Length: 118
Image (cartoon, rainbow, N blue to C red; front, side, top):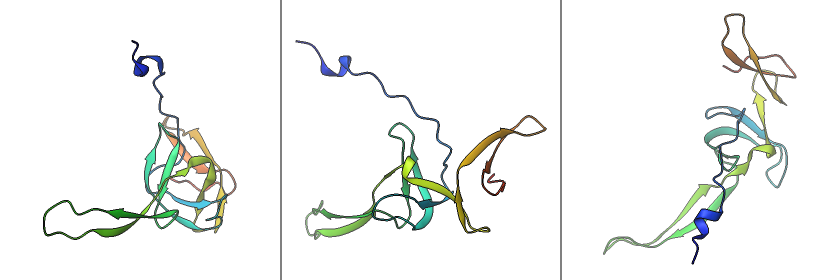
């Protein structure tokens, strides 16, 4: 017998221009037009979790005796291609450009407005 895990290639993380803490706007899907803050990035899957977007309801069984089950609402992940970084000052979404500053450090800025992100 052969092991299925040996035949699969290991997924490598994808370089993501969206980071935790960025404000993003959803550009595709049922939540199109909504904005929120990125809570978590999943680089291996190329997905992001955005606060208040793509909510899912999950029924949780009780784990201890005497505890009751509950219904939990939590954010599900979105594909990174379905969100764009949103400028709260200019009220517009834009692509992100990575450039090297004069001092040699990498910086991110919005292509449309030129606003520095970090």
